[in-house]
Image (cartoon, rainbow, N blue to C red; front, side):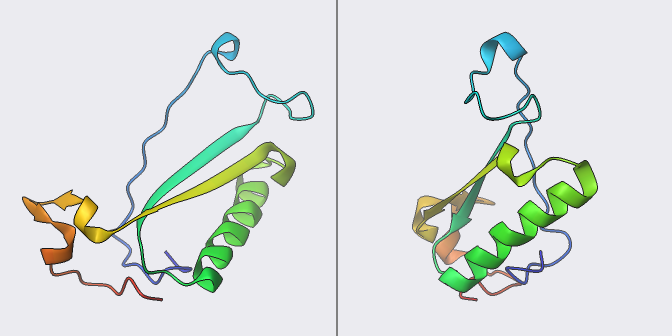
Length: 101
């Protein structure tokens, strides 16, 4: 929310849990190994994306006790016209926040 200047109500998460036998990860990671994939509209600056990533690492370690070594974060950026939201392409949608930050 802070890194991208999003309103409080813009929280959407989906969690996928795998059995340990179905989740193969590098030997230098612990059982807490976590992959975070974030889908976003294009337009955020490199600085905003770096702020998001660094805050995620810090908050996950502080709040969950998961070391940064055990976390991988990927941002997937796509043009707004590749998203359909509330019945229209996102580039035709009136947003209550800025994408170019």
